Image 1 (tube, rainbow, N blue to C red):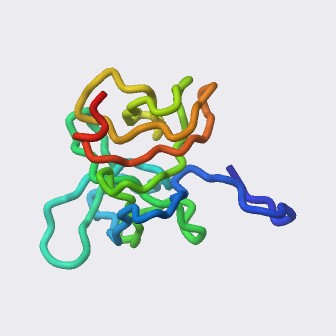
Image 2 (spheres, rainbow, N blue to C red; image 1 turned 180 degrees about the vertical axis):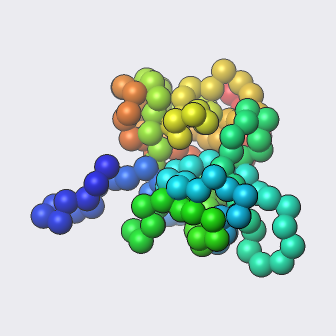
Length: 155
């Protein structure tokens, strides 16, 4: 979604963090091994690196452990290698706007869809990342997802 300079208030955008009640958001850097052009809301994993802030790359396989999601930044529409970024941690309790890939019930456990940077209702698995704070009626709806620890997420 693009912003219009004539709008009166900012629209919700995928990757924006909402309900700032102590959710953990940390500084990271996109690793050189990344494919680049990572959008806000992209699920990322940590790369084993020495020194500095944690280096992250996009989650590409179903076996990847999700570290968190890249938070929206007005300066970067996408993030490339070496770019600094803020990451909302999966177990940090933050609420992040995410795009639904189908209808999702309120409070349903959600998982990521790697191919489209969206979320869907979970069928159980290692990629469960939180609970839907809002209801999604259609593919493409923007909803808030509470990023919760796996022990809390389990249905």
